[in-house]
Length: 275
Image (tube, rainbow, N blue to C red; front, side, top):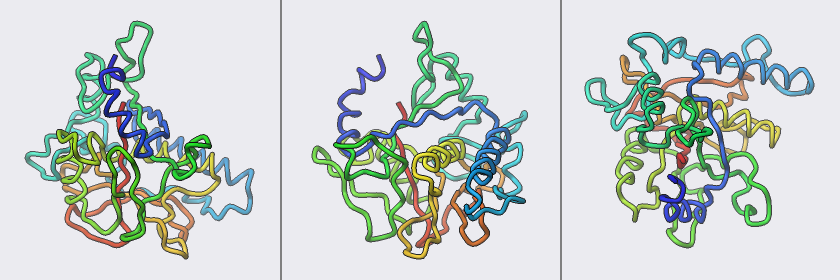
């Protein structure tokens, strides 16, 4: 039913290239998902000895990631409307899971559809732009489109042209763009949301499996990619925004943090449509 009701919006987003489906086990603890992620990378290294990886530290995380989504007062807040300590209007993972169970969660669905159509809490379903964006009319969507550096992106869409969200803006600016577009059907970013760490980890594993190359290789020699500012979540106690990228120099995946007002030519945002 929800897809039928949103068919016009989804048709426009499909025209803009949002054709890559991603299922995310949002209800899984972030610590458990990180451990799964480590095993995934190490398993690939085992079968591909030439892969440039630090096997002793394949996944580096800033210290506040540990246990951030669990407990009575979790530090990690999801889908904020602003990056402020007092009035972020975001929700904890437990709150979102409860709302999914009751079928009243916004910004998205009640989870993956179950037998009675009530939804299965703990999952989110996304549409992203794929890496083979220009060939998707003829090919299956593969991987995920990189975040273009400033001035290097290409608009997509014939119905509503969508300029790419290029690097070199602050997290506050990216969040403002996406928030202002939520209720504006004329915006090219209508009903798009920034990524959570759970989204990014699943996207990395999918991208790596399909393309055999890391997602968001921000320090590649030709400077065509950026690292991802995850505006779908932030640490409420420190008012820091999450970020993620592949660090070729130290041979590991990095889950770090950014100040909400920080600006860097290497930092951008990847958004999705939650269905």
